[in-house]
Image (tube, rainbow, N blue to C red; front, side):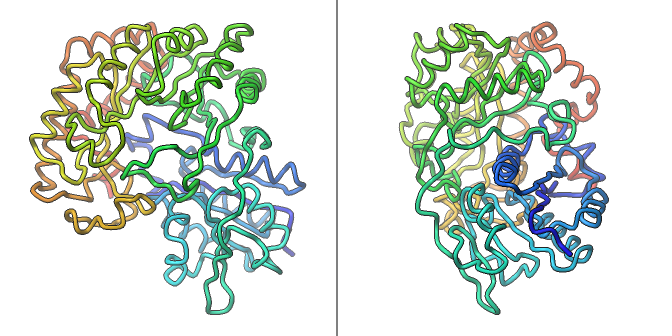
Amino acid sequence: MLNDKKILLVHPLGYRADAAGHDISRIANIMPPLGLASIAAYLEQRGTSADIIDCYARPDSDRAIRDYLLAEKPAFIGFSCTTSSFLDGIRIAQMARQAVPGIKTVFGGPHVSALKEQLFPNYPAMDFSVIGEGEQTMAELMAMGRDDAASVKGIIYRKGSQVCFTGHRDQALVLDDLPFPAYEKLAGFPNSYMLPIFNYPQTPNTSCISSRGCPYACSYCDRSVFRRSFRYNSAGYLYEHLRYLRERFGVRHINFYDDQFTFNRQRVEEFTGMMIDRPLGMTFNCAVRAEHIDRELLTRMKSAGCWMMSLGIETGDEELLAQHRQNADLDHLAQKIRMIKDAGLRTKGLLMMGLPGETEESIRRSMKYVFSLPIDDFNLAKFTPFPGSPIYENIHELGEFEEDWEKMDCMNFLFVTKGMTRERLEELFQEFYRNHFKRPKVLWGYVTMLWRSPDSWLRFFRNFASFMKFTRTTTRLMEKEN
């Protein structure tokens, strides 16, 4: 007899578990599955028992999943999947069905929200998928879905040989009404999770999401889950969330995993005022856009504990940038980056290589632009056209695209724009990284991390061979072993 009031939520790894120990992207950053933790908290509040197994934090979890299913007999198993982890989710769903006949599988996340009904004919292990935000939809699905799936908005389900979509939910969730994520459901939290190396001053640390959606419409961003909405927690809720993390788990540093942390200036002013008047002994990072910061706000954020800011540069070629996002003013962006640095904050640039229209000249302009700026750290991703992004719709007209979902993790050049080759993109990618690490100011910045972020250096030395291999090849070590 299956328990209708119990669900196991799974965050799939997305590749072989025995390769995880050598995966450079995982070594450098293990982020908690906050979406699943939020769903778990919401369900628990409504009388449903929800447990989480995070295969990314604990890669060898197949046995743990099977043992849980056999012992607890949950009526549902849910998966939160990116494009690269979707097929691993399917594999685990098949395993779950064999272990516990009658269990219902539910898939959520950006991949299924983008592709919707297209997935069901090819993947019979899918019983339901949640389209959009998961909290309320999952609660209703568990309450009514086995007998009356058609009454639950925001799901796709099977009806005989038909695949039915009940339509998007009419109203988005009010974020302040949600309970704090069920961090306690994540085994070993917070010590099982690590922010990117050299991106924090102290431990323990974790990520936090204080908004959903984005007010902008860049060509490369997936909008399938939150669509065109943009909502955020109030300053008061945000402060209490951080206080909870500090008092319950001892967290000392937070990375706000929001697209636009400073979009609403009043919210930031109120939040920083609370952090200054009633200090929590915590520091934080956030991502911003140049349009939404100024010298006064930066000074205030620094006083409140802001340690690092990230900005999406994407490319240092203004003409190329204008094809893919709004407000492509690189001079203005450079001015704001220098302003952040002058405020005493660490700066991180977020870039991608291989956008449609990219040329060797545009890549070299990006190098020149980035190396002219006081950027302490940067992340260079390999452009990947994800389902749900505007550019995905006509991507085959813009170049060669190998749509291999398991490799769609921004660590592979699966798309090659017209006029370029994959081999040349790889060479320029490696050159970009090597030249960054050769710059004296950058090297000195990493030296200062000896006293600014000592734990980062400990992690670096523990995984020295993996990091050195990445700087030479810019590939995940796990790829070499597959």
